[in-house]
Length: 125
Image (tube, rainbow, N blue to C red; front, side, top):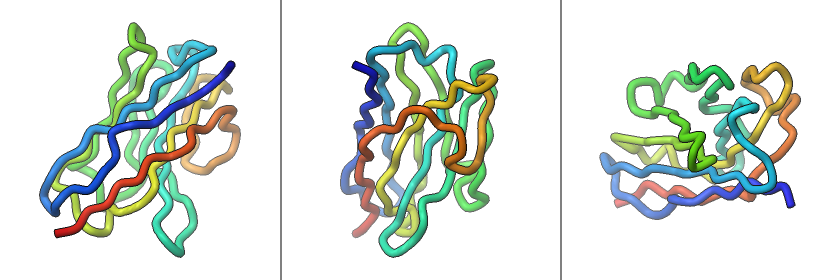
Protein backbone atom coordinates (compact mmCIF):
# COMPACT_ATOMS: atom_id res chain seq x y z
CA UNK A 1 0.00 0.00 0.00
CA UNK A 2 1.42 3.34 -1.09
CA UNK A 3 1.37 5.82 1.75
CA UNK A 4 2.94 9.02 3.02
CA UNK A 5 2.70 9.70 6.72
CA UNK A 6 3.59 13.00 8.33
CA UNK A 7 4.51 13.31 11.98
CA UNK A 8 6.17 15.73 14.33
CA UNK A 9 3.55 18.44 14.50
CA UNK A 10 2.22 19.87 17.73
CA UNK A 11 1.87 22.95 19.85
CA UNK A 12 4.96 25.10 20.24
CA UNK A 13 5.63 28.55 21.62
CA UNK A 14 6.77 31.36 19.35
CA UNK A 15 10.48 31.08 18.76
CA UNK A 16 10.42 27.33 19.21
CA UNK A 17 11.35 24.58 16.78
CA UNK A 18 9.81 21.49 15.32
CA UNK A 19 10.97 18.84 12.91
CA UNK A 20 8.32 17.35 10.69
CA UNK A 21 8.86 13.93 9.17
CA UNK A 22 7.36 12.50 6.02
CA UNK A 23 7.77 8.74 5.87
CA UNK A 24 6.94 6.71 2.78
CA UNK A 25 5.76 3.14 2.55
CA UNK A 26 5.00 1.11 -0.54
CA UNK A 27 7.47 3.08 -2.69
CA UNK A 28 10.94 4.57 -2.40
CA UNK A 29 11.25 8.31 -1.99
CA UNK A 30 14.63 8.62 -3.69
CA UNK A 31 12.98 8.62 -7.13
CA UNK A 32 10.66 11.48 -6.23
CA UNK A 33 10.70 15.15 -5.48
CA UNK A 34 9.03 15.81 -2.15
CA UNK A 35 7.13 18.97 -1.40
CA UNK A 36 5.86 20.41 1.84
CA UNK A 37 2.64 22.36 1.68
CA UNK A 38 0.62 24.05 4.38
CA UNK A 39 -2.92 25.25 4.81
CA UNK A 40 -3.83 27.80 7.43
CA UNK A 41 -7.43 28.27 8.58
CA UNK A 42 -9.43 30.12 5.96
CA UNK A 43 -6.58 30.13 3.46
CA UNK A 44 -5.65 28.13 0.42
CA UNK A 45 -2.97 25.50 0.59
CA UNK A 46 0.44 26.88 -0.37
CA UNK A 47 3.73 25.33 -1.29
CA UNK A 48 6.34 25.87 1.40
CA UNK A 49 9.39 24.00 0.21
CA UNK A 50 10.50 21.16 -2.01
CA UNK A 51 13.48 18.87 -2.28
CA UNK A 52 14.37 17.46 -5.66
CA UNK A 53 15.36 13.92 -6.44
CA UNK A 54 18.93 15.20 -6.78
CA UNK A 55 18.82 16.53 -3.23
CA UNK A 56 18.69 20.26 -3.90
CA UNK A 57 15.89 22.12 -2.21
CA UNK A 58 13.91 25.31 -2.73
CA UNK A 59 11.97 27.47 -0.30
CA UNK A 60 8.89 29.10 -1.83
CA UNK A 61 7.60 31.17 1.04
CA UNK A 62 9.74 34.24 1.70
CA UNK A 63 8.72 34.46 5.33
CA UNK A 64 10.24 31.06 6.16
CA UNK A 65 13.55 31.53 4.34
CA UNK A 66 16.38 31.19 6.80
CA UNK A 67 14.11 29.39 9.27
CA UNK A 68 12.93 26.24 7.46
CA UNK A 69 15.20 23.59 6.00
CA UNK A 70 14.43 20.39 4.15
CA UNK A 71 16.51 17.24 4.15
CA UNK A 72 16.07 13.66 3.09
CA UNK A 73 17.29 10.32 4.40
CA UNK A 74 16.94 7.78 1.63
CA UNK A 75 17.96 4.93 3.92
CA UNK A 76 15.03 5.70 6.22
CA UNK A 77 12.82 6.57 3.25
CA UNK A 78 11.95 9.79 5.03
CA UNK A 79 12.04 13.51 4.30
CA UNK A 80 12.22 16.15 6.98
CA UNK A 81 11.22 19.78 7.39
CA UNK A 82 13.13 21.48 10.13
CA UNK A 83 11.32 24.60 11.34
CA UNK A 84 13.11 27.06 13.60
CA UNK A 85 12.10 30.40 15.11
CA UNK A 86 8.47 29.54 14.63
CA UNK A 87 5.91 32.33 14.45
CA UNK A 88 2.16 32.31 15.02
CA UNK A 89 1.66 32.83 11.29
CA UNK A 90 3.29 29.45 10.69
CA UNK A 91 0.24 27.81 12.27
CA UNK A 92 -1.27 25.46 9.69
CA UNK A 93 -1.78 21.87 8.71
CA UNK A 94 1.38 20.73 6.98
CA UNK A 95 1.28 18.16 4.19
CA UNK A 96 3.98 16.36 2.32
CA UNK A 97 3.56 15.18 -1.24
CA UNK A 98 5.60 13.09 -3.66
CA UNK A 99 6.11 14.01 -7.32
CA UNK A 100 7.55 11.47 -9.73
CA UNK A 101 7.81 13.54 -12.91
CA UNK A 102 11.47 14.18 -13.61
CA UNK A 103 12.17 14.15 -9.91
CA UNK A 104 11.54 17.88 -10.12
CA UNK A 105 9.62 20.23 -7.90
CA UNK A 106 6.58 22.34 -8.48
CA UNK A 107 5.46 25.12 -6.20
CA UNK A 108 1.84 24.34 -7.00
CA UNK A 109 0.02 21.14 -6.27
CA UNK A 110 0.36 20.13 -9.89
CA UNK A 111 1.71 16.72 -10.65
CA UNK A 112 2.09 15.38 -7.15
CA UNK A 113 1.26 11.72 -7.14
CA UNK A 114 0.88 10.97 -3.44
CA UNK A 115 -0.18 13.05 -0.47
CA UNK A 116 -0.02 12.55 3.25
CA UNK A 117 -2.88 13.17 5.60
CA UNK A 118 -1.32 16.24 7.20
CA UNK A 119 0.01 17.16 10.62
CA UNK A 120 -1.12 20.14 12.66
CA UNK A 121 1.40 22.77 13.69
CA UNK A 122 0.19 25.38 16.16
CA UNK A 123 2.44 28.21 17.26
CA UNK A 124 1.01 29.99 20.25
CA UNK A 125 1.95 31.22 23.70
